[in-house]
Image (cartoon, rainbow, N blue to C red; front, side, top):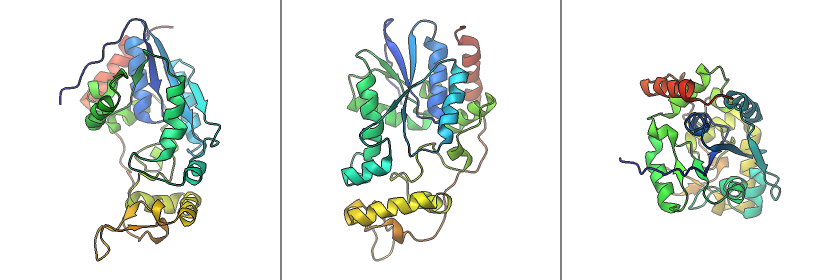
Length: 269
């Protein structure tokens, strides 16, 4: 796939959407190395009360790593809590994803941005299609994706963080693929079995939302048998395989090239 290039104007702000994940951290570090000497590079984060508390520690470590103070935005309407979003908006997952992402993240980020800002997105090499989809849906938003440009995958990003001497967020260390909130409606059966074991209070909280909202809030489906395709609630989640990623991340050739960019192109204070 040939990716479209983004023209970065000399007066544009470079805005890194930092999600407390390894990918956005490395994308921001690479953007800073490339544009820090010539542009105003800002790091922007949306605080979520539902995320694991260790994400705040990771953000502080990344501030030291980048030498920048991050701007942290916090929603007031829902108390930055995904559970409040689910209950007040009356659904957990819709055709366009979970409402928490839109109301607790995107709305805040959109309100903060200025015309002409170039957004730095943490899409990895495995997510080139997502980048193109984003550009199709948002033709007026200039974006850059340093990880895709350098062929860096999710495991590369984790390895770069570790090699920088930074401890990965707890959710990664617990075996989850992302550092987002535990109990995310976008997860499948194996993910939810892991949540039921590792975060029983979160699992019960999501069950209570479905108890209140009813069948319209169910997002898991039977994959086989006479009820194949039918939705079922979390309380009926059958026991089976649990999805965790317990392998240690390794640094590929592209990873080492990116590290060289970070070290040799990084602007001096």
